[in-house]
Amino acid sequence: MGKSFERVRLCTVGKLKDADKIPGWVRANGGEYTKDVDGRTTHLVTTKEAYIQNVPEVQTAKTLKKVKIVNFDWLEDSLLSKTRRPLKEAPYIWETIISGKPP
Image (cartoon, rainbow, N blue to C red):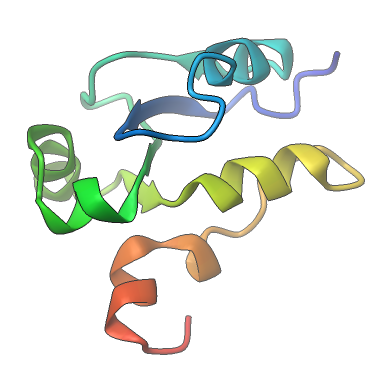
């Protein structure tokens, strides 16, 4: 596999589809998977429920401001895209999806 996710440091929270496979997918594509959100995290993949409940990981990501809080579709669509590179996050950002505003 390539290093298409080399600039991605991803964390997950919530009951996600294929959650046990996500770390392997990220690493196989050159990214880093972590269990905790910190200053080096680039993406938090979370469920709608966890986002709405504002669980601690979501709170931390919001506080850090640079972490993109996205749904599982962003990861799946990125990995299934022709280039297997991270897609633009705007359509997958939970804040945008929930507000109903166009990205």
